[in-house]
Length: 101
Image 1 (cartoon, rainbow, N blue to C red):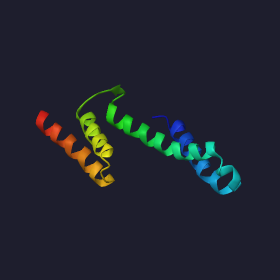
Image 2: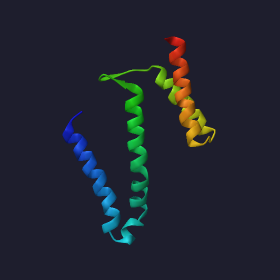
Image 3: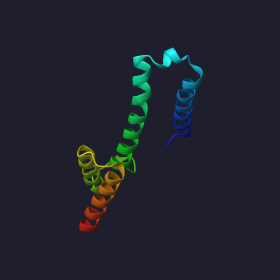
């Protein structure tokens, strides 16, 4: 990973966070700004999940982690509590690994 990309992303996130303290309240209530501040964390977390599930050694792979992610997605769709979603994904991944390994 490039350290410059990591540091730039950290700086951008900190700048966005601090903007909430220094910008006028009226600007922060604008619909586009609210949408952006709500969407950025979701997009960053989704990108992190995608790289951890589908990426290995600079390659795209589909292994037991995909099955665990799908199980967690079903638990989310069924509106399970967050801890149940995490345990479901981890347990299904472990079971698939145990059965194939």
